Amino acid sequence: MTLTPPPGFRTLLLVDDEPALLNALKREFRSAPYEVLTATSGEEALAVLADRDVQVILSDYRMPGMSGVEFLAQARALRPDAVRMVLSGYADIGAVIAAINQGNIYKFLNKPWDGEELRAVTAQAFAHHALVRRGAQFSQIFENTSEGIFILDREGRFETVNGAFCAITGYGE
Image 1 (cartoon, helix red, strand yellow):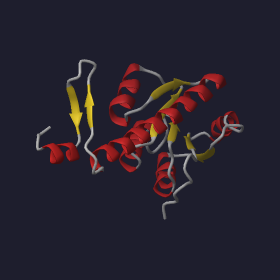
Image 2: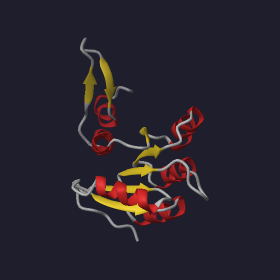
Image 3: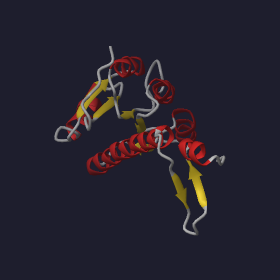
Image 4: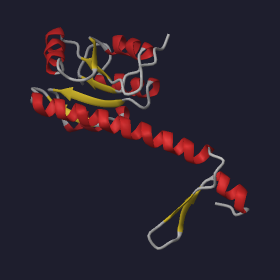
């Protein structure tokens, strides 16, 4: 069963195979204005994502069984709108490229982490998630309203129109 949180509710999922590091990460966010969930493997994290609406995921890169990149690629398929980040002590360029290309990550952060930076980047990730979600909502409104809408550039030329505008005016896009 998927639980739907109230509007504005924010959830962070921390994924690391080392319980002591997970506890340290959880302490970093103890006063943060969002729920913090944890998982000690990619498989466990995927189970969490199947049941919960998570907006931001912070995952280790090197984990037994399933690498962080493999996990984030599957997480992307399961929760495409979740913002995905990597926190790892393993920062070779191939790892960063794989994380970007396969996991479509927002940020790659290094261990040991700076708590202030980690909290700031996580807050930015939540803001990014909200902005993307709001943009998708406005896009749906633009496309599905019965009112004709057009957007002009600075010179007064049409940039885009919605389907209702085309139906009302008889002009194509």
